[in-house]
Length: 404
Image 1: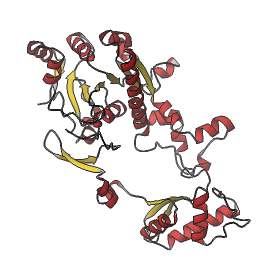
Image 2: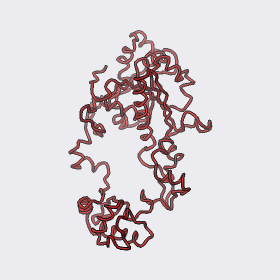
Image 3: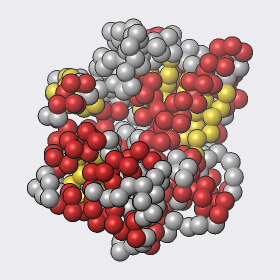
Image 4: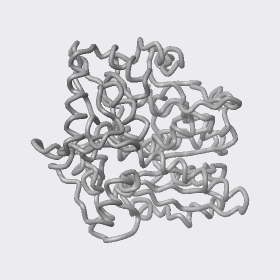
């Protein structure tokens, strides 16, 4: 199987995905990092959109995957796909709802090939619901707009903007991977697979557990006038510019942190103005405004490193605000080996994130970079029982493609 090593807790799990862009492939990538045998079924008529340019996403989020560029919508290509499913545990797709039904690939048809198959459908608005929404195409910012996150991410002086980077896609991928493995565990016990409906906008709703629950239960709208980072009006909570021009992010939040901040700033903790056991103070109150002013003045009179060192010594959560390039040489990132460099199939060196999270006894690893189009066509199709003649016929009919 293309010299794929056995490793990780998922080394006996077989996954196939026919998806492009981010959400579906990321779901599969999480499992590939932990040892699953992942087959990426790519459209031979139009490659994945993230192959454009250098293809950084391909190398980061398609690593550890084998690639077959196969038309599964009809004919011999679809027959090969159904034979492939006989030995697949989890299949992930991320097309507009109804597409697979048009091809004759309903859940029931796929279960005829493999009754224990777990099928994951990822879409913007879900497989069911108001027909006007179910059929809509969607990308990450559309889900953020519909699900409420984009509104919460707006500033009083600016227009609504999506939260970077592609959080609806990645949240959906996490939910899809978790639920797929949960369903697979059940299928191993019962022999019965499942069909999972992941809607991107619902992934956004599920991740907004403070603002949305307050809105739904108390009618409070976290509108642009009330949007100050994530603080919900708390003082000394946000980003602050230090003496050297570098920004830090901190939050005076929680009983212990409030006590530490008062002591550091010389505020009278335990007084009527700053009562003991207070978890936070709000802007617009005398105590909150005093705490905010103290934070601004302290940061302005110290370098970012001094602030970070002092705050973490006394117990106030704090970090300098890094850009991605700053992480490369950061001692903590290096000590944990959070980044790694490997060769792509084309021989280029590529630096990216390591395998997260870390498992002590069955760690994940990276055994190859993102594959080229059709890189593993023959290996995969031989595995499902096709002959060389049948494979040649698929090439001749345009249902199978390979990057030269």
